[in-house]
Amino acid sequence: MVCLLSRKLAPPKFAWMNGRFVEWDKATVHISAPIVNYGSGAFEGIRAYASKDQKELYVVRLKEHIRRFFESAKVLRLKIELPAKEIEDSIVELLRRNEFHEDVYIRPLVMERGGVALAEGAVSPADLAVFSIPFGRVANIEAGIRCCFSSWRRIPDVCMPPRVKSCGNYVNSTYARKEALAARYDEALLLTIDNKVSEAGGANLFMVKKGVVVTPPVTASILEGVTREGVLHLASKELSYPTAERDIDRTELYLADEVFLCGTGEEVAPVISIDGHLIGEGKPGEVTKKLQTLYFDIVRGAVPKYRGWITPVYGGS
Ligand code: PMP
View 1 (cartoon, rainbow, N blue to C red):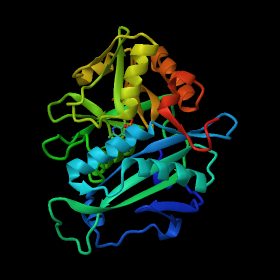
View 2: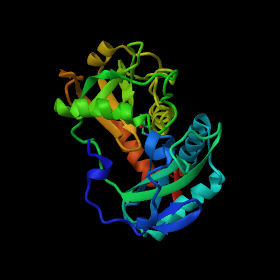
View 3: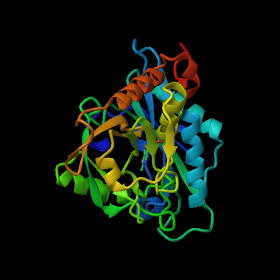
View 4: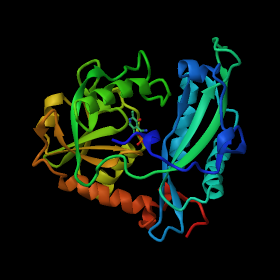
């Protein structure tokens, strides 16, 4: 996996904060803010894909991501002071102003505001921001990735709710991922505190066994991924596979025919080994490849039936 911020990039011209477009270097928060001190904020991760001729850019599942953004803020008791529609429109306008014609990543943030790093009231005011950067692959989705189970467990809902995309949650992911990278794997998988399969640090997990496409339920300490929901829909409605949301044991994965991760960043990434066990034949499986192809056709605007999943930036070609 490639760290989002490790790539050397020329900064875009504009970011967006609290309803205004601002120069990139001016999009800052103070070191005393609770978001800096405690990680009390939430974010979204959205992709926009360029069309084949690079004239158009399509934002993927914009409304669904902004809905989850508001849900995260609600659980965190942070007040988003602008309506969803204004944030959605501002994201599209930000991409236009930065004149992006390549694949990009979009990062909305809601950050607890405060002059000093002391606890706020029950519902806290928050700064809103969005930035976007050019963004390619983070996972080797052609060859597949090698995973291991982390010695860390996925945070449970009773401590740090994983269905909330809060900034602080990602320290759990960081522990797991760094452990995996240090052991020369590509990515970490996490178990729940009840020893069931949860997800990866930044992506949901699926297995395919005897033609059934299975993923852990929303109660398995997962983030309720927008891509997960989309993949379940496509597997069932377009490719006619039976699907199931149920608990999965660790060793079921070792014996699965196929395993893949999915998420905005990871896209649809085949898992070819786990803890050194080859999955299936140790190469991307047929169901995974079919889902990958369909997913990329949809997000690049090539499937008219799924135009509702994407928002054109430059005028709807
Ligand atoms: N789980 C975690 C922990 C994540 O960070 C992500 C990425 N947002 C996902 C799953 C996948 O979610 P989505 O498909 O909405 O990007």
